[in-house]
Amino acid sequence: MQYISKSISSPHNEEVKQLARLVQNSRERRKQGLMVLEGIHLTQSCLEAGMPPQRIYLNEQASGHGEVAALLARLPASCTVVTMPEAVMAKASALASPPELLAICARPQATAPAAEAARVVLEDIQDPGNLGTILRCAAASGVRDVLLSKGCVDVYSPKVLRAGMGAHFVLNIHEQVELTAALASFKGRKLVTYLEGSSSLYSQDLTGAIALVFGNEGAGVSPALLALADARIRIPMPGHAESLNVAMAATVCLFERVRQLETMS
Image (cartoon, rainbow, N blue to C red; front, side, top):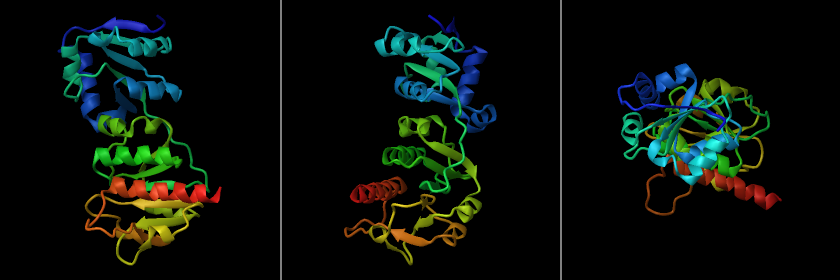
């Protein structure tokens, strides 16, 4: 055992209360520059990306789990593992059933995107499931840079992390971005999903340096970003649905880009 080990038995312990605040409060997470990973899979993904956790809270009922033991064996000496009863873990976790573990990690620092790189631009996305799904699809489609407006839900909230399924650790995520300025300075083509005055997604060349812009679930893309668009695009829907969920729309657009790139190769 190379990590530091300790235990907590009381749900009234101050550290348990601090952990609960981190899980529940986005302002607290941003203030401390931290994120909370729930469960084995996310923590494994974080480790594989070279971002070891600072602290792990271990559900004592999972201490004999084979995957947990393998994960703990990979921890650096600087990590502290705090074992607690499941009932205490339940006080901090927002899940209906407490996970095997909770891991505290530093939020990754974004690096400047390559000038010619494709990117996803998200304005005021509010639903954690939508945001996490878009991140997962961006990672799967090979788009690394994602820009988020100040009005987006906390991208490192536990719910978004769960929906992202590890995508956070392979993406270059830019938070709190002034999108108007970012798009104005982008030299590639800016494609905004919008119905009025739009052309079919399938008529557009998505293979070069592009920014795919998606707006708020209810309000859509703002007039300021629409004004910067090189093209307004829509997904043809010959059926009876009025519109697609923003995460579904992003998925269709991202994988149309993949199809076009594969056609070129």
